[in-house]
Every structure is written in structure tokens, then in C-alpha cells.
Length: 181
Ligand SMILES: CC(C)(COP(=O)(O)OP(=O)(O)OC[C@H]1O[C@@H](n2cnc3c(N)ncnc32)[C@H](O)[C@@H]1OP(=O)(O)O)[C@@H](O)C(=O)NCCC(=O)NCCS
Image (cartoon, rainbow, N blue to C red; front, side):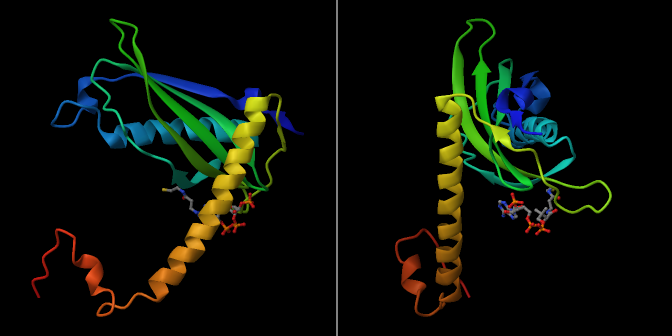
């Protein structure tokens, strides 16, 4: 049966405690990735009504540091569904609990695939009901992102297959690389 986006929309809120910090006193990127994976899992498995696996992660850019003591909220919703795959959009917002000031730290997209418990193979997920203009926009963006990734993957594979160490050595000319054979 088709499901709406609101049915599986999920938020995880977690206080950033000192053990999450790196040597510079900011929150480890790995902690953030783990929380994003968790909320993506919760949201996707709720839509699918099945266990899911993480297949691919897009748009992870940590542009603003997160401080110890901040309250992190990760908002996840299904943006697109294929046959067995789902694109989960995750918006991360960090709040200074003393001032109430909020900052949007990143928005990322996790592709999750539903698996059948018995066969372990990808299994069909319910169709997605879009209820607003924003739902439609996010879904169209997900389709565009998927198409561009396929083009990029093909272009990259072609470039790599044609890579020639002697011929392409000039690419290192302006880099801060030293060859010391
Ligand atoms: C991803 C996985 C399920 C694909 O299995 P498969 O037998 O090749 O199945 P398919 O080719 O039918 O792909 C299944 C779906 O995954 C999607 N998919 C596969 N590779 C993908 C990729 N790199 N990026 C995005 N989606 C991908 C396919 O498009 C397909 O989607 P659809 O059903 O909506 O059309 C399988 O490779 C797997 O289980 N990987 C390990 C996942 C895991 O353990 N994650 C945790 C990481 S620690």
C-alpha cells in the first residue's frame, strides 16, 4: 500500500557530549555520520516495513563545526522511491541550548535498499505519496541527482580507463606532490 512522506518522517535529537569531540574540541565527523545513518535507517525501514541497508551517501559536506554542548536534531524524510531503493534526505540542525541560536550544518542524501528477510535480496517498497509542492520538488531533485550520478559514473569510468601514468604526469605539475621513487 502506498505511504505518505509524513508516515515515515523521523527526527533524532542528541546532546553533543564531550566524548564525541575530537582533539580540537569540535564534534567528530564520524559521530555525525553515524547519527545520520541511524536516522536514515529508521525513516527508510518505516517506509519499507522491512530491514534496510545503506547503499550510498551523497552530499556530505561539513561546512560548520558542531560544538560540545549543542543539541543536534537530524530530520529525515523519504524524498524518492525506486523499486527497492529509497532516497532519504537528512537535514541537520544544531542548537546552542543557552541562546537558542540554531545553525543548519548540512543536508545529505542516503540511498537505502530494503531487503527481504528470508532471501536477503532487495525487495519492493511501497509507492510514495507526494502531498505538497515541496514534496514534489525534493522528489524531482532526487531524480536529477540520480541521473547526474549515472552520467558522472560513466564519465569517470571512461577517464580512468584511459588514464596513462606517463601521459598524464603533467596533472601533478601544479600540485604539492613530490615524486620520490
Ligand atoms: C546494494 C545492494 C543491495 C545491491 O544489490 P543487488 O543484488 O546488486 O541489487 P540491484 O542491482 O537490484 O539493486 C538494488 C537497488 O539498489 C540500487 N543501487 C545499487 N547500487 C547503487 C548505488 N551505488 N547507488 C545507488 N543505488 C544503488 C539499485 O538502483 C536498485 O534500486 P531499485 O530497486 O530502486 O531500482 C547490495 O550490493 C548490498 O547488499 N550491498 C551491501 C549494503 C550494506 O551492507 N550496507 C552497509 C554498509 S556497511
